[in-house]
Image (cartoon, rainbow, N blue to C red; front, side):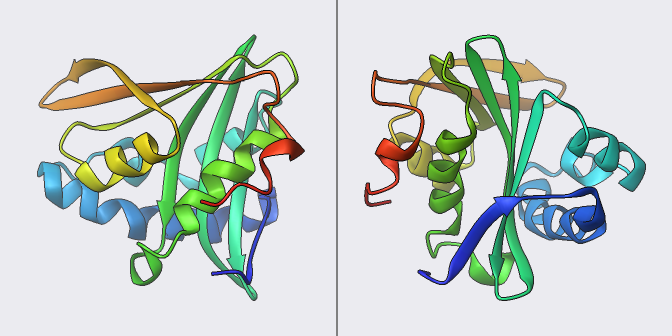
Length: 169
């Protein structure tokens, strides 16, 4: 999907982002039998507030004028926490999620030393994608009936930034 453009999400695109996230996370909800995943229950007002936070970067993937994916990054000192990686169901498995993961690195402050992400421990496709991008399993955390796997990627001296832009996803 070479024609996918990655850019910052603005408050004006929040409604479209909410729709993309809900569509993408329905399969996760079905996998875990839990319709109350935070990505599915977040309100538009909460999403707009999140987009406007100074410590959060929200990126979108566009195919033409259509928002087809997104990722959220919370910045915390020397650490970045990825979340809510979402790709519309009809385009999953085509490299859009990987493009978003790689694009995030360009938006991280220089002092960022590590990037963390979590996903459901049964989300095998997600775990494989993160592992392929250099994320290593660290631990599980139980939250209610769900168990999340936490993964970390240590950034090297050449990361983050443009130096990774040429790497193949």
